[in-house]
Image 1 (cartoon, helix red, strand yellow):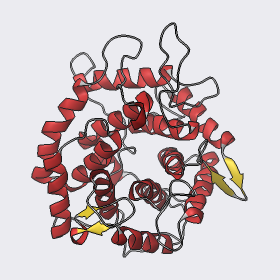
Image 2 (tube, helix red, strand yellow; image 1 turned 120 degrees about the vertical axis):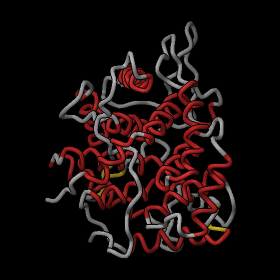
Image 3 (cartoon, one colour; image 1 turned 90 degrees about the horizontal axis):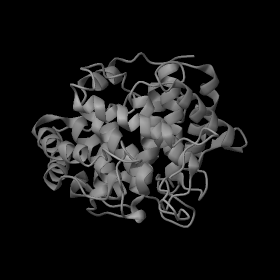
Image 4 (cartoon, one colour; image 1 turned 180 degrees about the horizontal axis):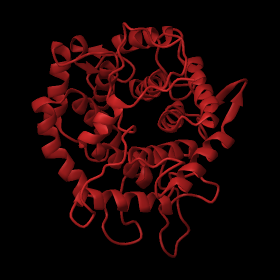
Length: 354
Protein backbone atom coordinates (compact mmCIF):
# COMPACT_ATOMS: atom_id res chain seq x y z
CA UNK A 1 0.00 0.00 0.00
CA UNK A 2 1.17 3.52 -0.66
CA UNK A 3 1.53 6.05 2.11
CA UNK A 4 -1.84 7.43 3.06
CA UNK A 5 -2.92 10.92 2.21
CA UNK A 6 -2.55 11.94 5.85
CA UNK A 7 1.22 11.86 5.49
CA UNK A 8 2.35 14.11 2.65
CA UNK A 9 5.79 13.33 1.28
CA UNK A 10 7.05 16.74 0.15
CA UNK A 11 10.79 16.57 0.79
CA UNK A 12 12.82 17.96 -2.10
CA UNK A 13 14.94 15.12 -3.48
CA UNK A 14 18.52 16.12 -4.25
CA UNK A 15 18.88 13.15 -6.53
CA UNK A 16 15.90 13.49 -8.81
CA UNK A 17 17.01 16.45 -10.85
CA UNK A 18 17.23 16.45 -14.60
CA UNK A 19 20.41 17.77 -16.23
CA UNK A 20 21.15 21.36 -15.34
CA UNK A 21 21.31 23.09 -18.69
CA UNK A 22 23.04 26.43 -18.34
CA UNK A 23 26.11 28.22 -19.60
CA UNK A 24 29.15 26.32 -20.83
CA UNK A 25 31.68 25.15 -18.27
CA UNK A 26 34.04 27.93 -19.35
CA UNK A 27 31.50 30.60 -18.37
CA UNK A 28 29.84 28.80 -15.46
CA UNK A 29 32.03 27.77 -12.51
CA UNK A 30 29.34 25.43 -11.14
CA UNK A 31 29.10 23.59 -14.44
CA UNK A 32 32.88 23.27 -14.52
CA UNK A 33 32.79 21.90 -10.99
CA UNK A 34 30.13 19.35 -11.95
CA UNK A 35 32.19 18.13 -14.88
CA UNK A 36 35.25 17.70 -12.69
CA UNK A 37 33.27 15.80 -10.07
CA UNK A 38 31.73 13.36 -12.54
CA UNK A 39 35.07 12.77 -14.25
CA UNK A 40 36.72 12.05 -10.89
CA UNK A 41 33.96 9.68 -9.82
CA UNK A 42 34.15 7.83 -13.14
CA UNK A 43 37.91 7.43 -12.68
CA UNK A 44 37.36 5.78 -9.28
CA UNK A 45 34.91 3.13 -10.52
CA UNK A 46 36.13 -0.46 -10.20
CA UNK A 47 36.28 -2.92 -13.08
CA UNK A 48 33.32 -4.75 -11.56
CA UNK A 49 31.21 -1.57 -11.76
CA UNK A 50 31.28 -0.75 -8.07
CA UNK A 51 32.96 1.96 -6.03
CA UNK A 52 34.92 1.76 -2.80
CA UNK A 53 35.32 4.24 0.06
CA UNK A 54 39.09 3.60 -0.01
CA UNK A 55 40.27 5.79 -2.87
CA UNK A 56 43.42 7.31 -1.37
CA UNK A 57 46.52 5.74 -2.89
CA UNK A 58 49.72 7.43 -1.65
CA UNK A 59 52.50 7.28 -4.24
CA UNK A 60 55.30 4.84 -3.44
CA UNK A 61 53.50 3.38 -0.44
CA UNK A 62 51.19 0.50 0.22
CA UNK A 63 47.76 2.11 0.42
CA UNK A 64 46.49 2.12 4.01
CA UNK A 65 42.83 1.99 4.94
CA UNK A 66 41.95 5.69 4.96
CA UNK A 67 38.17 5.46 5.04
CA UNK A 68 36.61 3.63 7.99
CA UNK A 69 33.61 2.48 5.93
CA UNK A 70 33.83 -0.88 4.18
CA UNK A 71 30.54 -1.21 2.33
CA UNK A 72 31.08 -1.15 -1.42
CA UNK A 73 27.31 -1.09 -1.93
CA UNK A 74 27.18 2.09 0.18
CA UNK A 75 30.00 3.70 -1.81
CA UNK A 76 28.36 2.65 -5.07
CA UNK A 77 24.99 4.00 -3.96
CA UNK A 78 26.46 7.40 -3.10
CA UNK A 79 28.35 7.61 -6.41
CA UNK A 80 25.27 6.66 -8.41
CA UNK A 81 23.17 9.27 -6.62
CA UNK A 82 25.56 11.99 -7.80
CA UNK A 83 25.35 10.79 -11.41
CA UNK A 84 21.57 10.62 -11.17
CA UNK A 85 21.44 14.11 -9.68
CA UNK A 86 23.17 15.34 -12.83
CA UNK A 87 20.67 13.61 -15.12
CA UNK A 88 22.96 10.69 -15.95
CA UNK A 89 21.11 7.35 -16.20
CA UNK A 90 21.91 4.00 -17.76
CA UNK A 91 19.98 5.20 -20.83
CA UNK A 92 21.30 8.72 -21.37
CA UNK A 93 24.25 10.93 -20.66
CA UNK A 94 27.99 10.90 -21.12
CA UNK A 95 28.35 8.47 -18.22
CA UNK A 96 25.50 6.09 -19.00
CA UNK A 97 27.88 3.10 -19.14
CA UNK A 98 29.20 3.98 -15.68
CA UNK A 99 25.68 4.23 -14.30
CA UNK A 100 24.64 0.95 -15.92
CA UNK A 101 27.69 -0.82 -14.50
CA UNK A 102 27.06 0.62 -11.04
CA UNK A 103 23.43 -0.48 -11.03
CA UNK A 104 24.45 -3.96 -12.18
CA UNK A 105 26.98 -4.12 -9.35
CA UNK A 106 24.30 -3.34 -6.76
CA UNK A 107 21.85 -5.85 -8.21
CA UNK A 108 24.31 -8.72 -8.66
CA UNK A 109 26.12 -8.32 -5.33
CA UNK A 110 23.03 -7.85 -3.14
CA UNK A 111 22.44 -10.63 -0.67
CA UNK A 112 19.12 -12.38 -0.97
CA UNK A 113 16.98 -12.76 2.13
CA UNK A 114 14.05 -14.65 0.74
CA UNK A 115 12.54 -12.24 -1.79
CA UNK A 116 14.22 -9.26 -0.16
CA UNK A 117 17.40 -7.47 -1.28
CA UNK A 118 20.01 -6.85 1.43
CA UNK A 119 22.31 -4.03 0.26
CA UNK A 120 24.11 -3.36 3.54
CA UNK A 121 27.37 -4.76 2.21
CA UNK A 122 30.49 -5.32 4.27
CA UNK A 123 29.96 -4.37 7.88
CA UNK A 124 26.19 -4.98 7.64
CA UNK A 125 25.35 -1.33 8.23
CA UNK A 126 21.76 -0.33 7.58
CA UNK A 127 22.85 3.22 6.67
CA UNK A 128 24.34 1.87 3.44
CA UNK A 129 21.28 -0.19 2.62
CA UNK A 130 19.20 2.98 2.75
CA UNK A 131 21.66 4.82 0.50
CA UNK A 132 21.92 2.01 -2.06
CA UNK A 133 18.15 1.50 -2.05
CA UNK A 134 17.61 5.20 -2.69
CA UNK A 135 19.93 4.93 -5.70
CA UNK A 136 18.01 1.97 -7.15
CA UNK A 137 14.62 3.55 -6.55
CA UNK A 138 15.68 6.86 -8.10
CA UNK A 139 17.15 5.03 -11.11
CA UNK A 140 13.86 3.21 -11.56
CA UNK A 141 11.80 6.39 -11.15
CA UNK A 142 13.89 8.29 -13.69
CA UNK A 143 13.89 5.59 -16.39
CA UNK A 144 10.86 3.39 -15.64
CA UNK A 145 13.08 0.45 -16.50
CA UNK A 146 11.29 -2.74 -15.50
CA UNK A 147 14.56 -4.58 -14.89
CA UNK A 148 15.20 -2.20 -11.98
CA UNK A 149 11.69 -2.46 -10.56
CA UNK A 150 12.03 -5.80 -8.78
CA UNK A 151 15.42 -5.02 -7.16
CA UNK A 152 14.16 -1.60 -6.01
CA UNK A 153 10.96 -3.07 -4.56
CA UNK A 154 12.86 -5.91 -2.89
CA UNK A 155 15.27 -3.44 -1.30
CA UNK A 156 12.34 -1.41 0.03
CA UNK A 157 10.89 -4.62 1.46
CA UNK A 158 14.13 -5.14 3.40
CA UNK A 159 13.86 -1.64 4.87
CA UNK A 160 10.40 -2.35 6.26
CA UNK A 161 11.59 -5.76 7.50
CA UNK A 162 14.52 -4.22 9.41
CA UNK A 163 12.51 -1.51 11.15
CA UNK A 164 12.68 -1.87 14.93
CA UNK A 165 9.18 -2.93 15.85
CA UNK A 166 9.38 -1.51 19.37
CA UNK A 167 10.71 2.00 18.63
CA UNK A 168 9.87 2.46 14.95
CA UNK A 169 13.43 3.51 14.07
CA UNK A 170 16.31 1.82 12.30
CA UNK A 171 19.63 0.83 13.84
CA UNK A 172 22.90 0.80 11.93
CA UNK A 173 24.14 -2.53 13.28
CA UNK A 174 22.58 -5.14 15.53
CA UNK A 175 24.26 -4.12 18.78
CA UNK A 176 23.41 -0.41 18.54
CA UNK A 177 20.18 1.44 19.42
CA UNK A 178 18.09 2.91 16.60
CA UNK A 179 19.61 6.09 15.18
CA UNK A 180 18.01 9.29 13.88
CA UNK A 181 20.57 9.67 11.07
CA UNK A 182 20.26 6.03 9.97
CA UNK A 183 16.48 6.34 10.11
CA UNK A 184 16.61 9.44 7.90
CA UNK A 185 18.30 7.51 5.09
CA UNK A 186 15.53 4.91 5.21
CA UNK A 187 12.91 7.67 5.16
CA UNK A 188 14.43 9.24 2.04
CA UNK A 189 14.37 5.84 0.32
CA UNK A 190 10.75 5.27 1.37
CA UNK A 191 9.77 8.75 0.23
CA UNK A 192 11.31 8.11 -3.17
CA UNK A 193 9.59 4.72 -3.32
CA UNK A 194 6.25 6.40 -2.61
CA UNK A 195 6.80 8.79 -5.51
CA UNK A 196 7.68 5.83 -7.76
CA UNK A 197 4.56 3.88 -6.72
CA UNK A 198 6.53 1.12 -5.06
CA UNK A 199 4.65 -0.59 -2.26
CA UNK A 200 5.02 -0.71 1.51
CA UNK A 201 2.75 -0.81 4.53
CA UNK A 202 1.69 2.68 5.74
CA UNK A 203 2.24 1.43 9.29
CA UNK A 204 5.97 1.74 8.53
CA UNK A 205 5.59 5.52 8.43
CA UNK A 206 3.38 5.68 11.50
CA UNK A 207 5.96 3.70 13.48
CA UNK A 208 8.78 5.86 12.14
CA UNK A 209 6.95 8.97 13.33
CA UNK A 210 6.77 7.45 16.80
CA UNK A 211 10.56 7.04 16.87
CA UNK A 212 11.15 10.61 15.70
CA UNK A 213 8.84 11.86 18.45
CA UNK A 214 10.87 9.90 21.01
CA UNK A 215 14.18 11.61 20.17
CA UNK A 216 12.90 15.17 19.76
CA UNK A 217 13.27 18.08 22.15
CA UNK A 218 11.93 21.62 22.06
CA UNK A 219 8.57 20.22 20.86
CA UNK A 220 10.23 19.01 17.65
CA UNK A 221 12.74 21.76 16.98
CA UNK A 222 15.77 19.61 17.91
CA UNK A 223 16.72 15.92 17.90
CA UNK A 224 19.14 13.46 19.43
CA UNK A 225 20.49 10.32 17.77
CA UNK A 226 18.95 7.68 20.04
CA UNK A 227 17.27 9.68 22.78
CA UNK A 228 15.81 13.14 23.23
CA UNK A 229 18.49 15.75 22.69
CA UNK A 230 19.93 18.56 20.60
CA UNK A 231 22.66 17.14 18.38
CA UNK A 232 23.40 19.00 15.13
CA UNK A 233 23.48 16.05 12.72
CA UNK A 234 20.49 14.36 14.33
CA UNK A 235 18.58 17.65 14.29
CA UNK A 236 19.27 18.17 10.59
CA UNK A 237 18.22 14.59 9.83
CA UNK A 238 15.15 14.78 12.06
CA UNK A 239 13.90 18.03 10.55
CA UNK A 240 14.43 16.61 7.05
CA UNK A 241 12.20 13.69 8.02
CA UNK A 242 9.64 16.09 9.43
CA UNK A 243 9.63 17.76 6.02
CA UNK A 244 8.74 14.37 4.55
CA UNK A 245 5.81 14.27 6.94
CA UNK A 246 4.47 17.65 5.84
CA UNK A 247 5.87 19.97 8.49
CA UNK A 248 6.30 23.53 7.22
CA UNK A 249 7.68 26.81 8.54
CA UNK A 250 4.27 27.82 9.86
CA UNK A 251 4.89 25.30 12.66
CA UNK A 252 6.89 27.08 15.41
CA UNK A 253 9.12 24.06 16.12
CA UNK A 254 10.12 23.77 12.47
CA UNK A 255 10.88 27.48 12.25
CA UNK A 256 12.98 27.28 15.42
CA UNK A 257 14.91 24.26 14.16
CA UNK A 258 15.51 25.75 10.73
CA UNK A 259 16.84 28.96 12.27
CA UNK A 260 19.12 26.91 14.53
CA UNK A 261 20.65 25.14 11.52
CA UNK A 262 21.02 28.34 9.52
CA UNK A 263 22.71 30.10 12.43
CA UNK A 264 25.04 27.19 13.13
CA UNK A 265 26.13 26.98 9.51
CA UNK A 266 28.22 24.16 8.11
CA UNK A 267 30.34 21.84 10.23
CA UNK A 268 33.83 21.20 8.92
CA UNK A 269 34.51 17.49 8.60
CA UNK A 270 30.87 16.40 8.78
CA UNK A 271 29.48 16.21 5.22
CA UNK A 272 26.52 14.14 6.39
CA UNK A 273 25.36 16.94 8.70
CA UNK A 274 25.92 19.49 5.92
CA UNK A 275 23.87 17.37 3.53
CA UNK A 276 20.86 16.99 5.82
CA UNK A 277 21.02 20.61 7.00
CA UNK A 278 21.14 21.80 3.40
CA UNK A 279 18.24 19.52 2.49
CA UNK A 280 16.11 20.80 5.37
CA UNK A 281 16.84 24.46 4.68
CA UNK A 282 16.20 24.08 0.95
CA UNK A 283 12.89 22.36 1.69
CA UNK A 284 11.72 25.38 3.63
CA UNK A 285 13.33 28.22 1.66
CA UNK A 286 13.00 31.78 2.89
CA UNK A 287 15.59 33.96 4.68
CA UNK A 288 17.14 31.04 6.57
CA UNK A 289 17.90 29.23 3.32
CA UNK A 290 19.28 32.42 1.75
CA UNK A 291 21.56 32.95 4.73
CA UNK A 292 22.80 29.36 4.61
CA UNK A 293 23.29 29.35 0.85
CA UNK A 294 25.29 32.56 0.79
CA UNK A 295 27.51 31.39 3.64
CA UNK A 296 27.93 27.64 3.07
CA UNK A 297 27.89 26.99 -0.67
CA UNK A 298 30.88 29.22 -1.49
CA UNK A 299 32.92 27.54 1.26
CA UNK A 300 32.12 24.08 -0.08
CA UNK A 301 32.78 25.06 -3.68
CA UNK A 302 36.17 26.60 -2.91
CA UNK A 303 37.31 23.44 -1.13
CA UNK A 304 37.07 21.30 -4.28
CA UNK A 305 40.50 20.13 -5.41
CA UNK A 306 41.43 21.76 -8.73
CA UNK A 307 44.80 20.15 -9.53
CA UNK A 308 46.53 16.79 -9.23
CA UNK A 309 45.24 13.20 -9.47
CA UNK A 310 42.33 13.93 -7.13
CA UNK A 311 41.13 16.90 -9.18
CA UNK A 312 37.36 17.29 -8.88
CA UNK A 313 37.09 15.70 -5.44
CA UNK A 314 37.00 16.96 -1.87
CA UNK A 315 39.51 15.83 0.74
CA UNK A 316 38.51 14.44 4.08
CA UNK A 317 41.72 14.48 6.11
CA UNK A 318 40.16 12.89 9.15
CA UNK A 319 39.65 9.26 8.12
CA UNK A 320 37.17 8.80 10.96
CA UNK A 321 34.71 10.98 9.04
CA UNK A 322 34.48 8.76 6.00
CA UNK A 323 37.24 9.51 3.52
CA UNK A 324 37.44 11.27 0.17
CA UNK A 325 34.66 9.47 -1.74
CA UNK A 326 32.23 9.90 1.15
CA UNK A 327 33.01 13.62 1.34
CA UNK A 328 32.97 14.17 -2.42
CA UNK A 329 29.63 12.50 -3.07
CA UNK A 330 27.81 14.24 -0.23
CA UNK A 331 29.31 17.66 -0.94
CA UNK A 332 28.62 17.41 -4.67
CA UNK A 333 25.08 16.34 -3.89
CA UNK A 334 24.64 19.19 -1.41
CA UNK A 335 25.78 21.80 -3.93
CA UNK A 336 23.05 20.80 -6.37
CA UNK A 337 20.27 21.83 -4.00
CA UNK A 338 20.38 25.46 -5.15
CA UNK A 339 19.35 24.64 -8.70
CA UNK A 340 15.79 25.82 -9.50
CA UNK A 341 15.60 23.37 -12.39
CA UNK A 342 16.35 20.37 -10.19
CA UNK A 343 13.76 21.50 -7.64
CA UNK A 344 11.11 21.92 -10.30
CA UNK A 345 11.86 18.60 -11.96
CA UNK A 346 11.19 16.70 -8.72
CA UNK A 347 7.79 18.26 -8.24
CA UNK A 348 6.84 17.98 -11.91
CA UNK A 349 8.20 14.49 -12.59
CA UNK A 350 5.34 12.14 -13.50
CA UNK A 351 4.67 9.41 -11.01
CA UNK A 352 5.66 5.94 -12.12
CA UNK A 353 2.96 3.34 -12.34
CA UNK A 354 3.07 -0.26 -13.42
